[in-house]
Image 1 (cartoon, rainbow, N blue to C red):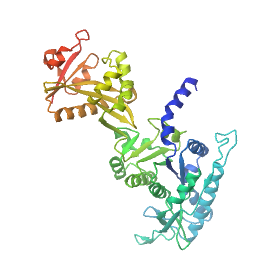
Image 2 (image 1 turned 90 degrees about the horizontal axis):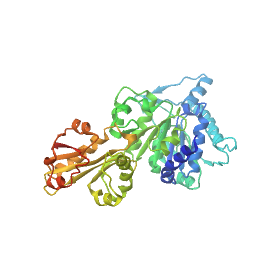
Image 3 (image 1 turned 135 degrees about the vertical axis):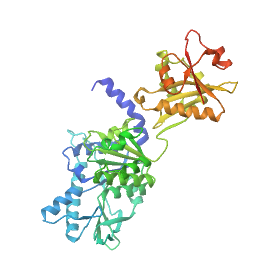
Image 4 (image 1 turned 45 degrees about the vertical axis):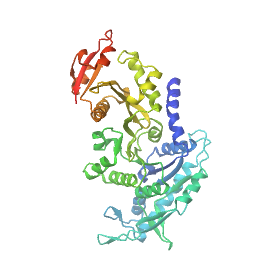
Amino acid sequence: MITSDFVASLRSAAPYVHAHNGRVFVIAFGGEVADRPDFDKLIYDVALLQSLGVKLVLVHGSRPQIERELSRRALESRFENGLRVTDRAALDCVKAAVGSLRLDIEARLSTSLASTPMGGARVRVAGGNWVTAQPVGVRGGVDHQYTGQIRRVDAEAIRRELDAERIALISPVGYSPTGEIFNLRSEFLATEVATALKADKLIFVVGSDPHEWKLAADAGDAGQLTVAEAAMLLAGPTLEAQDRGYLDAALEASKSGVMRVHLLAAGLDGALLRELYTLDGAGLMLYADADYEATRPATIDDVGGVLGLIAPLENAGVLVPRSREQLELEIGQFFVMVRDSQVIACAALITFSDGRMGELACVAVHPDYQSGGRAAALLARVEAEARRLGLTALFALTTHTPHWFIEHGFAAGAVEDLPSDRQRFYNWRRNSMVLVKAL
């Protein structure tokens, strides 16, 4: 890597390092991810997250490991209603498979060789009987026997381990007050754990690539889903059964108060770090909070973000230069679009004493987010505000982008069409085109 690129990347990650420090993240992955030859890389990234101050809970699945154990003992695998039927013989296979995989994960987390990314890591791992379960019982006339559902998660005990700077490792089994062991679905175990802990994030590392899930490309942003969009995707026919299980669990977590649920492809090297420490991430995020990407009135705290957004356009002559002092005085006229608290687009509505026309000014979208309909969304917000104020028309002055305004309902006008206050300050040297839209 070029040194300047490395420095820039590290600096751009700094806000996320600060934001994630001390936060609780639940990371869930299935047994198929643990079977991958590059599973060590995920473990390396988990260790790095802990070194950056993240409080981590790992929830692992074990379906392929259980299948192999059943096959080794010449037993058949049985599923009903999407759930494994766990009889006594199958439960013995569950205990063998889960126990073996858990030991393997703990061993990998214990790596501290200087020749690996975990050199000097000294990761400490904790486990316990934190999950109380009960039998699923009879469903559709089928007794699922030792297949269980979660009754309670001991969040207080898990938090004590997290506060002691240990990674909490939770396997897909639960225990009853009578001493029985139950086989649990790891996806919904992760959801229950994240909900009980009031985790800041729930992250599923999955075997497929969530970016290929069809609705993701149809959403406003290919990297995110609203709760409503996730429900639509679940109702459709495009997802495989295993992916459907992950998205179903993610949706349930969002409904239960987990504000950010991330779905990452296990096959993408560094997906965990890219998703958490870059602005655009690397996976599919299901978000329950409306402010992840939102349009709102600007505040004085947005001045720096707006200045950074419009400065390149001012330098290119597209926008009239504004000083910081001027922008601070005018910031109440702006609307901004923010993505994860960073300003990525802006527009201003300037009103005049005649109360008839308003000016759409200073429309700017960050280069990384153009061609996504964001300028049109800002225009719609400005138009709604103009109507609320009783204005009957908007006008814009432009030297570079008249076609965009025309495509969005503006028509060519003349300087004489402008409010008298604006006519007096028209810059004849710039000779901007006047475009007008009736409301």
